[in-house]
Length: 221
Ligand SMILES: Cc1cc2nc3c(=O)[nH]c(=O)nc-3n(C[C@H](O)[C@H](O)[C@H](O)COP(=O)(O)O)c2cc1C
Image (cartoon, rainbow, N blue to C red):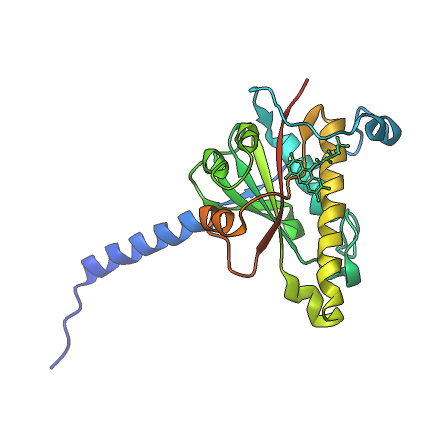
């Protein structure tokens, strides 16, 4: 006897499945970066400092694009990046929480250096929740960068010594964010004091993406 397959309900279930999976893989192609800033490198270094209070005014998608590129963007044809990395193994996965940016819907995104884009991971604004895991001023950032490290990418080659290399990679990316922020009239601070488990839980990070630094950014002038 032939099995009867109800075609119409199956078709609707298929459509529902497609819409759910596409919602999870929303991708934002970021604008091209600007290679001509307003401040010289020397002026930027002169001004750089940790800034913990930010204006409420919106940031722009161009500024977010610029900061992500400064942190981990590709700057050469061979695919290497703006920040150095031990063995060019790139253990950093860079997340950004968007809370007050013209041109990007609030949510948690993962940066994809290979095509300078963002993948939506969570469409809720989780920035207010961050203060459960760390100093409260973090929640006044218009965006918040979460620098995570995937240790095994580097320890696979360098063994235990790779752990320190991952931390060094984080430092380079963070300093690039500091400098790019300063030259755009934005402020930031590197925050290392947070509750690892709570932060991982709030952001639902994959188990091997270890949060190593948090950087709120907002307009300061
Ligand atoms: C590894 C590291 C961890 C830090 N963690 C925090 C932090 O959790 N909270 C904070 O307010 N500042 C933090 N800072 C910022 C320092 O307090 C700041 O860099 C220092 O006071 C010097 O000030 P400056 O950055 O303005 O030169 C951290 C800096 C580094 C390098």
